[in-house]
Length: 445
Image 1 (cartoon, rainbow, N blue to C red):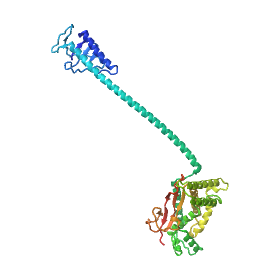
Image 2 (image 1 turned 135 degrees about the horizontal axis):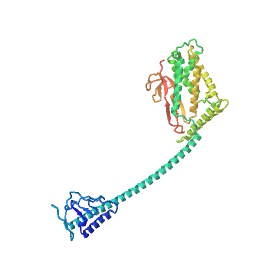
Image 3 (image 1 turned 180 degrees about the vertical axis):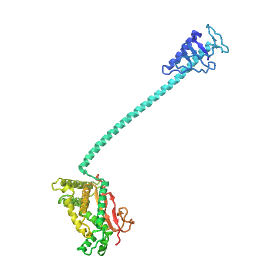
Image 4 (image 1 turned 60 degrees about the vertical axis):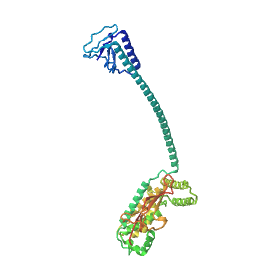
């Protein structure tokens, strides 16, 4: 490593080296610390690999330290003192040292200039990207404000729509699942009732009014049983519960459901008459695709039912505990008079169970009457009395019954199906939805 002290150079050489060094510092301008392998500190100059003109230089603010085994090179200066050349040393001249330093300083300045240019370009690119980022950020902020404003507007609109809907819609609209569970419970209670009280063998010969009871049963179930076969069917403890289920459901559909039994006094007849009148005009009129006539009619029906029920509850003559006790007992007496003859005389009259079934039916009808959607019980197709072909889309075998094949005949309806027309929003009355399938059974006479 050549080791040269500045005081060995001439004033001109020192001046040239100082100017070259200043040029590097100015090129850096305080932004880039020159990482040259030229050290210029404390009056000591290091130049490595000078001869090969590929100097390895260092300039990082460190204090240069001379290696203890560094070779000392001597050179002749103009007018300056000459030093004794060490053994094996290469002769150097001041001109070579100064030129090497100037060349190194120039190269370093050029590299620094390129780095500065690259830095400037990078800064400009970053500034452009930052501007684009800020622009995108501002756009996102603007979009967010628009979305927030739109959300607030939607919330306000929803509140207004809900207020309008509440003015024309009863507050106690029930879900399909809730109604289905109520019907399932009623089906289960009727089935248990018939099995418990009509599942024993009985002797009918000594019973009065048997002929009239047979005729009544023959006309009140969904299968036509020849009169001479009625006695055999109802005497069979396996068939009788099934036949009585069919009979009870047909009676409930005709006497309880859509009969407004839950309304006080003669109100039920008034509602039924007015409903028939309005619906008759609705059918005669021209129904548009918007469904406004249906919506208005069923909204009126639901609101009227709700108003009548609330008025009955507030009346001093309202039924005790809201359980429809009087009307349930009246209906129980009528139903019992028609099925009592088929009971075993060993059993007490199932008055409590019968009243409970009728109360459930009245409460269910009250809830269905207050729905804006229309509900219809499906006993038979096309409003005919009997259907003797099994349709798996609308029917299913009753509990304990064997699987019925498509198109094959069946005999009894153990429980009617339930169809919903329209929605609680007051539209789509032209789209029937089968909520529950009819339960049917096959008997062998």
